Image (cartoon, rainbow, N blue to C red; front, side, top):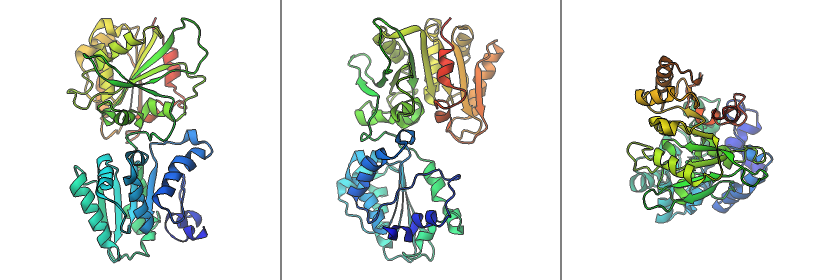
Length: 423
């Protein structure tokens, strides 16, 4: 087993070259891995680790060298479920993987980000070229397998690529590259407290997740509800696999990973999926909201009906304020990194609904949903005499979709909801 420490990533961790502050990974290394051992690692070893419920299961990455790299490709191609379990993968000098056409198609269809590093003097260079050409040209809509040649490197020296302190390591920085990706669907191999439903109405078909609190029930008791609208990264056709995209982040991620205490969390949570064919995005927000409120009317406490949305889903939340009657139903709403500038008509209705509390939340340097979108809503509402709760974090990423819904956040969303029932 000590041979595993001889090269690659384990070598640099063992000899004190790993910066655990900069790169917050849990690292697991297998000796002589094949696809079945990788499957066992993902499905059995990870769930058995201490504090498993604290792991971010949307960020499981594979790194493989040589024959280990070939095994990584074989694992991804073995099934859609296997591919769903991985957020991104880095391989160096892969041997020739034992894949057939359908397995290449599985990898390509699931669009797992892959970065393949090859020493220019490596004897397996042609394997890498053939592999990446096939994936990019036949099964990916656009090249997502990044094939990079490292000048003068042979097969036995590419392990230096894992050294975060070497010149080549800083140039490549594979660890930062990995962290920018999260899985767009939760692996079906992990248990979840969320249940999937598909509506059967001929007039309005959609799918959604439901979470019911694990609290002692009383006859006729009404409970608070959160209706959550996802962002553009989680759209889909409502099929069981595509519906899993909703668990990519935000509130459903914390529920699914067990990071919210099910014995004390009092909310019914409903998370519908927006079909990707909809134009504009979430143009079904109003009919879906109305349908869910009617569908769960026997459970919902009308004084504690809350909504939440992030990105394009935040825009969907604003649509609910297009009429005064519907706005009057909402006790409070959080709108995270809203994906457009303020709509003056909607802002007027918001300002005329003092019983509905508002919280706008974003990062100052979000590269995808500009903070100017959020501040335009805040400025417009303030000009109309309404002062919404505002959080703008000095951060250049889009991770507000996680921090806003984090149950450990000191400025706690769920406490804020419960402190703001409809008056």
